[in-house]
Amino acid sequence: LAMLMVVALTIRIALLFTIGKSKCDDDASNFNHAEPYDCGCQAISSQIRSRIVNGEEAIPNSWP
Image (cartoon, rainbow, N blue to C red; front, side, top):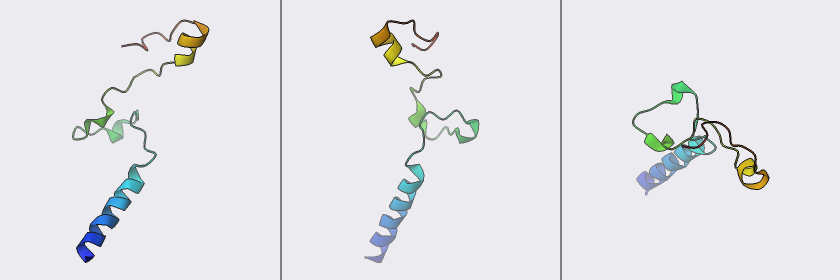
């Protein structure tokens, strides 16, 4: 029972440190080859409203 409580507490602490962390972080110090969860993040943020609603031109290079 004690071991189960330690495991549950460890998982909760780990989740506290990951909540709110951006997946697309430009900080090079956070780069880690072991965790490829950043795959697919855009280098340039797209402006979906202007493309769909207003018909304005998209940001250059924002589409893959």
